[in-house]
Image (tube, rainbow, N blue to C red; front, top):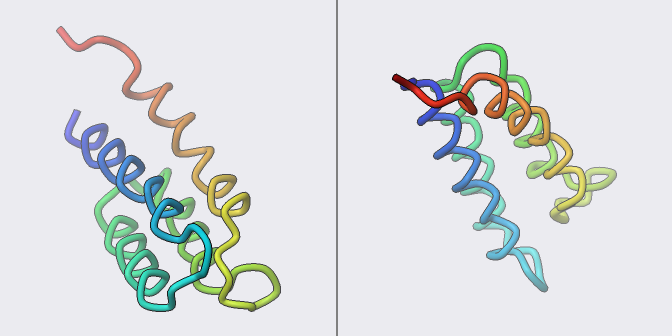
Length: 94
């Protein structure tokens, strides 16, 4: 259950990132997002860690290394994590 809480909290917090990047991309905000994703990658189960790493890569480079936030790629990288949550955490606990 701890894994479910860590993953759910992590996904919830990073999915709010695009709100902070509306309009112009802020290098400091991108750097903080990247750092947060790398930190989460170390805390989440191995089955989903690589998805957090992929999301960090999208935050690092954007499309074609532009350092412009690519929200569709970011969300696509995290989509399997949402599936993991449904599979492993969607059942009520006794």
